[in-house]
Length: 328
Image (cartoon, rainbow, N blue to C red):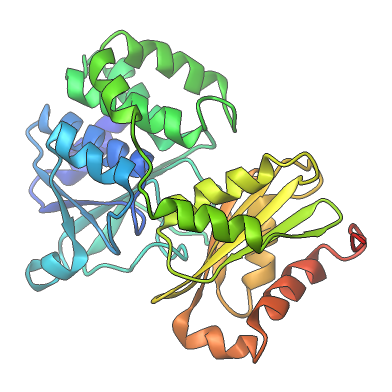
């Protein structure tokens, strides 16, 4: 692990903003919150920020339960300066789902693979099940006991991003679960884990089921209306749960364009590479071997032509050509 105290010294004397990926999920929120509270122990103040919306019940519930203050880019924009310091958390500069804020991205703490190489004055990029794991390890190595709300939030983020420890789990994730569990509030954790689905989510499930198409072991599903990132990811996991599916590609038409979530249980198909290569000339994407995301921005959607679902399918099947056979 990089020396965390270098980050502390780097931040001194500067206005600090901790930026998550757009449309932050529980892991991004928990990681930013945990880092903010850790920096406060060294008298470093910071503000949490994001672009997009916080529109999934599980994420908005976190803000209420843990009294986390996050600021949207639209609200922050007038006060941001070029000499402000930005720490990217659960995100990397120039990723498809990270808006380029005014300010200097001096640091990055993330658990995703790197697709666009960048130089930071401080970086800790390691492949783990959740970014919350990295933040938790800072507390452990520094001998700092996290506040109960911090430990509970980090534990929740870790559980959500690993799908209850069934996806992409590393030994460090397991070890940090034990560390966080001993400091967390289990009653509060149980409360936040309950009732995380809204009635309108059922419409998206219905659309995912109605529109699924199978090509060998690849499942495509189009949601013909706007869904938040977190729900698209949940639907991708839902499609992947089918016995016949080893790779799930779910996408939603939204105001900002076409948003993708890709899942893979096929050792020969890297989800991050798949979405990156499929969308390289028309959008952006990337992620882990088993889970990834992507976006075709609205201004690029006309490149899909009159039949966008067919075009999207062909973009992915072109990359997978030779591995698939059309299911009868």
